[in-house]
Amino acid sequence: MALPNCPSCNSEYTYEDGNLLICPECAHEWTLQSQEDRASSETITDSNGNTLNDGDSVIVIKDLKVKGSSTPVKKGTKVKNIKLIYDSSDGHDIDCRIDGFGSMKLKSEFVKKA
Picture 1 (cartoon, rainbow, N blue to C red):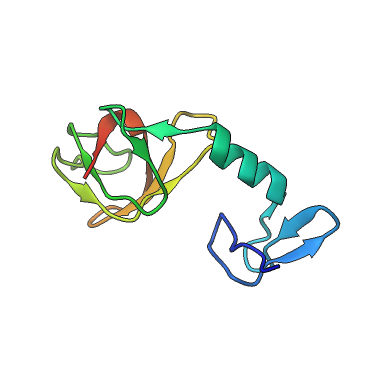
Picture 2: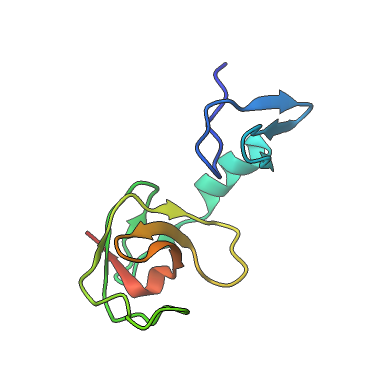
């Protein structure tokens, strides 16, 4: 059985330790069962109710202020290759990279599927 890539850094060098899967590159630990359950039971939707998936492209639907930057992320900005965060405590459930801003997290209520 091939082990899945790390959900945190997408490394292919994961290994098993008991019932845990471990990434040697970023030290992320997870269980395969919890990852499968999460993917099947939780869904993250955009502002229009469309289901989002890892790797989708989305469009920002309103100007978003960015901490530490004098310019906002403008309405209509296309964000490619998103990664969903299922266990976020602050409500930011999309991890992405935006040109001109770098890596950041977004709330799915402020995007629509492209």
